[in-house]
Length: 412
Image (cartoon, rainbow, N blue to C red; front, side, top):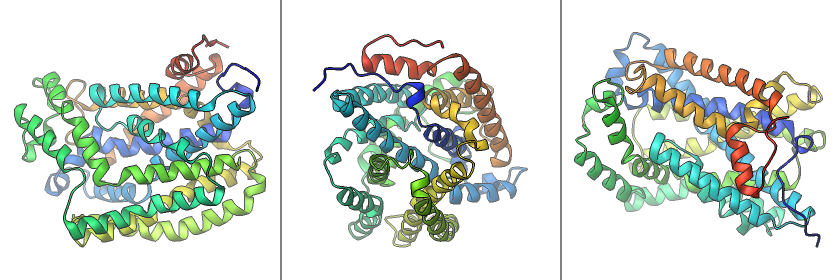
């Protein structure tokens, strides 16, 4: 075995379609996260109806729930699995231990994610990805068929889990929620309707923000457990690993017919079940109530099919234009996705929280969606300029240097 030194992907080794897809996913993630950043997700229905932008807000909210929520983090999960395959294949070909590089990257990602969820915003996804990603090497020796079976079982498992929750009336996140409630009581965070304004008032806004963040980790991971996010994410990781092992992102033309089938059946299955998911959300009945199983079933049957339909549509457009697609402009955003993801948190906190401009608390999607699109548009401009002058995004540069333990040239 050649004793070569591990190194990050060079520019000529990158697959632009993966970067563009990552940039595309980042827009959906931002639009989804705005429901938390603006506080609209905390408002009760009468409070939402009292806003001047209702019922447009309601229509936009249900549309987002149907066609955005869950689908874009699933694209990120798929890309994470593909990235794992790239690390394995590339480093094994070079005679370098791929697991050492992989675990180094994940450890650093976990540190970044922990800082994000504990110090900045409780809705972080990085720490979860890092922890679940630690399991991926367990599947590296699986055959393609076994890998596909495991991925399918995991993405469908929430149905069985929630059936058991209904039968035995338990909540996986109960202990975490109870701990969060203790912290809230200590910090005098209101549990009534005024909680929807807590983060967004200017009076003592710094203390309010820190009080809010203190139990944030417990609420976040209680929600993730109750939402069966762990098996779903791992399942999408494995689908991505499968696609990466087949190098579908390189051999796009060879998979043209597969992409057409995925697009067709993804939309046929995903659109009606996504609409049903949004409709049944209105009744506010969730597991462990029996009627909540309808929500679970429709959500499971909508998220992955629509995710795959979106990705396949993207790939087909890429094939059609021979890689010159107009969507290529999203690649710079995706190449510095970590920087842009964390930047979104900082910008949204400044715009919407009381410690900043305090725009949140009383605005709906009709207002904050255009703001979000504006934020993303600025990120496109900034990322495009940055990647013309530098080899890596700012945080990506630091992340890679710490991973590989050597200095990397930043400026082109």
